Amino acid sequence: MKSARITAPNEPLSVHEFETPKPEGEQVLIKVRSVGVCHSDLHLWEGGYDLGDGQFMKVTDRGVKYPVTPGHEIVGTVEDVGSNVSGIVKGDMVLVFPWIGCGNCPACKVGNENLCDTPRSLGVFQDGGYSDYALIPNFKYLAKLDGVDPDAATSLACSGLTAYTAIKKANSNSPEFLVIVGAGGLGLMGVQIAHAITDAKIICVDLDEQKLATAKEMGADFTVNSKDSDVVQKIMTICNNKGADSVVDFVNAPPTAKLDFAVLRKRGNLVLVGLFGGSIELSLVTIPLKSITIQGAYTGNYDDMVELLSLARKGILNPIISKRYTLHECNSALNDLKARKILGRAVINP
Ligand code: NAD
Ligand code: ZN
Image (tube, rainbow, N blue to C red; front, side, top):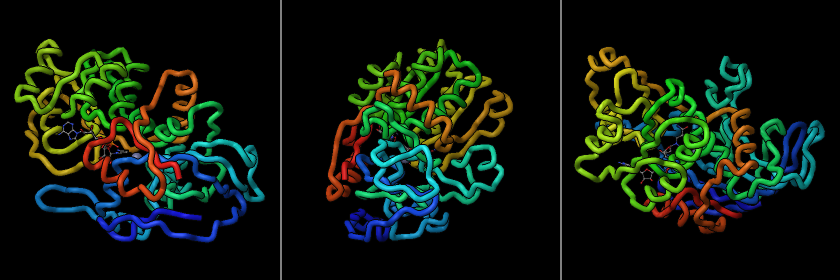
């Protein structure tokens, strides 16, 4: 099999040839049909996250070992199964749940493997889907597509799933006004999901007019370009000068985080999702005085991924796939995402 690997931070990915593995026990071998290119693959390629003040959190300090095959939004057909696999047969078209945990910690025990203390996520801590074949450790991490378009389905394993978790958290205070910051792969899914499952008026913020126009088509009621000097005032005016009840930040960098706090109203709910990173100073006293809630959201669990597949099957969710690359073009895919040239998601068809 052929896999595109990150061998060291910022080095071009190179395609390597390996013996195709034979699945054993609960394992399943997938012939990869499509794999989504996520901004998190870029952070993995860059070697870590910006902590602000010149500090950097290395992915290798979090347990990543190079070389690694990235790719956590994997769709493919079942090629071969181990002897203990049931309910999945050769030829099934499946979406892979990549946020695999240890199975034993408190999070895993209640089905939230995505929040495991010692994660083993595919495409991060174990080899993922930038490959023509992928070995999945257990058939329980697969969900049948049953009619969902394979390229579109890739988005449901990370961008859709993360957006779903975040929007559900943002909806816990029944927001009248919901601000979504960042209309990239995650944010555009967030707009669609918010439109489908909340009663909120959706205000979408990005730097890119084309992405904002698409957000409007996907269900945003208002769009605001964060390059505008009066961005805070524009959002406040839309929210009757009281501010937004909830903000979901799919960028989560200093300029957007400052904006989030500036437009969040009393009793507001802030959900931070993006991993762009950095740091800001917080006016501590405003947090109790405004009684705001600040929370993080990290991917989602298997059951939510299955729910999303059913929303996609009904046509309620339509992930945007705007560009397709071959495995050998994976460096171009990552560079195009970095240069903000991708609308919605790009996929690699190995
Ligand atoms: P993307 O590159 O597709 O989209 C990013 C979007 O943010 C773009 O539309 C860009 O124009 C916009 N943007 C950048 N800076 C901005 C600014 N200052 N103001 C307004 N908009 C700005 O990325 P993606 O795949 O959607 O991922 C977004 C982030 O979420 C990444 O950091 C990624 O690693 C992270 N992520 C987090 C989770 C999680 O579980 N928390 C899961 C997946 C991805
Ligand atoms: Zn992702």
